[in-house]
Image (cartoon, rainbow, N blue to C red; front, side, top):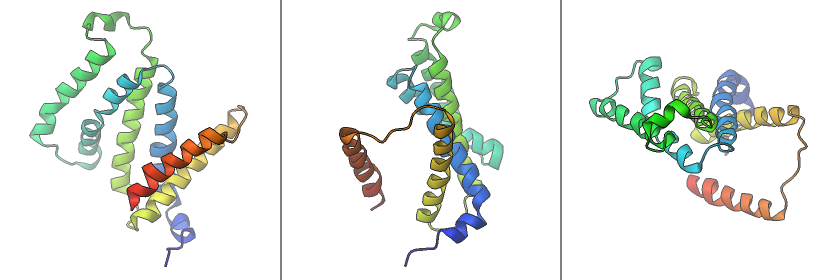
Length: 178
């Protein structure tokens, strides 16, 4: 028997809205906006620092103690991002003009770290599928409001985009939960 979604949605609306706003709406807006002005490689390397970022945030917000190994890895992760953003020439950092996308990706990374920490703190003790459904619904609803408010025309995807979307949903999401 499937769980009623209305009751937990009402009871925990604040938690679902907060987590969905930060981790679904905020992260995706920042991530896809950043990809308009940075390379996929830079984005991937900046996001690769997320475990470190999440651990540091959890230490500050939740009082968790990071391991010595993690603390040792932090400078390497940060140096890696600097090397990528500067194309390996540290003096370029003084003359960077097109770092907007990289900075947005860093903020997206921080949003995802907050999502991870907020999920540990505020996620109701309910089945994972219930929580995932309600967080995604809250985040997607906020994204829909933002899209409608943007004044840009909204359109359904074409046949090819619809097929690609169906494959991604089936392969990347549905099968992952089986």
